[in-house]
Picture (tube, rainbow, N blue to C red):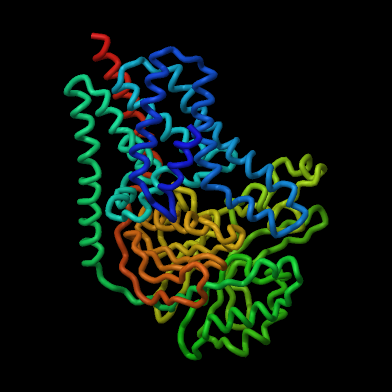
Length: 503
């Protein structure tokens, strides 16, 4: 089981060998179905799922331990994280196989839909429970197959995740076929990808025929490789700012919004950035705006609060607007049960002041020029991995994601993180702009196509000057309620095929 789970990791970015899942999931299902017929114990089934999950997560999330290498105080946690995190996530897959054993009626079609339903449903639970960790869903194996995943603009990522689990398990259903019903179900799941691809081609033609609109501001996205040592070795703030200005290549007289990555300025809070206005004013003029990730603090007599924020400034470093991150990284940006865990030495990885506070609400930023306006929704780093309602206000033109991917090191982590951006762009039918330090900066269009990119390890900028706007997607209107509808359909099929087998 560990080997099967480990092999499935190869289907994820950056490898995307999705074909391997047709073998791993089919073999996994065949094994479980045969063992359930033989009345194997509940305990055994629990371990089967856990072993598959441990193999899967230990091989595709090993990079989490890299974030513990930057501070020697965290070194003792490396072997613990290497085992405990995949062991914990493996419990979700153990729950799948345990429920499968309890509920399974020994009918092959019911078992097929039950297996898929449990997998899809538990993956959804994993994405929302305890702040949620929807990383490396099985569907991300198709992150390079844009025509196929274009259907998420209607049904969303979790719905497609459920369907592809069924798709990967179809070979097992064909092997166990006993009647025409199994053949018909196999044919349906073979035809679905064809229908999805046809829809993807339709969306592409629709997008190409949209009017090309010029943005009132050029949005200049920075891709940089400034070391994380800036947080630990007291690198001078001026050095980092000057390096970012050099990469940005300001052009006097041109309307440009410069976007710098998350938490890029060391040893400086939002209210302290004004101390460096002489550097900015030397290179930026009144046509320029600056957006960047920078920590914000609120000082009061009771308790100081700190926020991971995206802030926008004018060329004199006057604050125009700010957004505080809502979805914080557990143990990275906040410590669960902080009062207890602090006593035994736990602290947040990315700062030395304790946990960040959460923001209250997502905020739309607006730029105007000559009665033209452009609106964007900022998401900070980890917030890009969540599928569902991004905001109640859909009146914006693009999504902006800033990130610091240095915590992943030279691993598969940056590729996995980047793939989520593709899915969010398609789901919402919006351009997604990404600025990253030690990662990938890119302009991704509403079809998930990468129009411009600064690859991992490279430095520079890319400009977003014009765009085509798609209509509001069905998924952005209904969100994951579509996933709930699909769950009900699967439940209906499970009970229906059980009834047919009893007659």
